[in-house]
Image 1 (tube, rainbow, N blue to C red):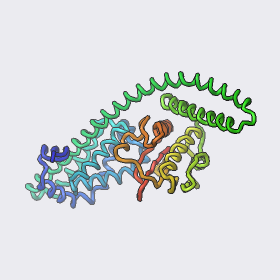
Image 2 (spheres, rainbow, N blue to C red; image 1 turned 135 degrees about the horizontal axis):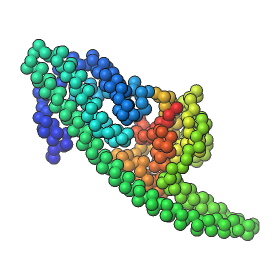
Image 3 (tube, rainbow, N blue to C red; image 1 turned 90 degrees about the vertical axis):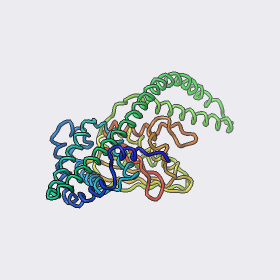
Image 4 (tube, rainbow, N blue to C red; image 1 turned 90 degrees about the horizontal axis):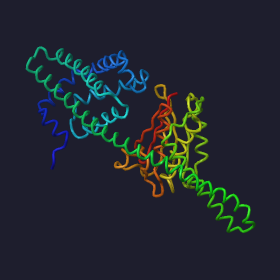
Length: 379
């Protein structure tokens, strides 16, 4: 069986069972101090303008991130250092790419952790020089291993991101040309359809076909509009927006199978967001349409909202099959779809509009099965 990347890295830094025992010995002494180390870590970040800017959500997110950092240090020293450990660390690397964190901040941050844990190891083991040396060597190895894992993931995801940017650039040029060329014939069809409507008279069969043409003409125009929205920065008509009202309007506009229930909850007493109500409505229409499609023919769609660290989070969940792992990493790219007749613009447009508002959208599996899309907007 071929060696995994983690196994290769552990072999390279000579990380073995003795190092695992040394780290677990340090864990006992360090655990009561992890909260203090996390405070030192974020005090250093907040005192540096560039690093503070790279911190998503700014100072208001520090409380949440401290808990995450404490958990990260806890597993750093307690293990197990297996493939699950690798997966957890690579997810952190992908977050660094997604938020555009400069790599030199990552090295600087790791040095803060290194300094503080070395200090703890001295305080605990200075009376036993051989054990102190073993603990410090193990700590140096695991932190080097951490940097190697993050940089490996950073490199792979950054290359993938650059490839996506190149594809989107080509996509944008193509869409701009096709959108312009298709508007003219669709306009002719729309004019001709208007004339035909006045001449079909009482022929019910002919009227049915004319209506069908009109319906499909609207679909075609909607696809072109969505394509063009993907490549242009449509200005936001900002105003205080009650997201509960926007979601209610979106839910009322979405058609769904009779066996699918839609519930909206948790919006009472939430603050407004500064945004464009029309574009935000489009976000939730797209998410609700996808959720209703996934939950059909018998299932449930739930929209839940809550306030979190100065932001508003809205989760759209369904009881459908969820998204397979192969599709997840490209889920928000244009032309990626799980629908037989979809063209893959809905989620890409959701992501673009959320980011225009200074927010984000993320996918996660729904506990118990199904999909969850979480939109986060500054409150």
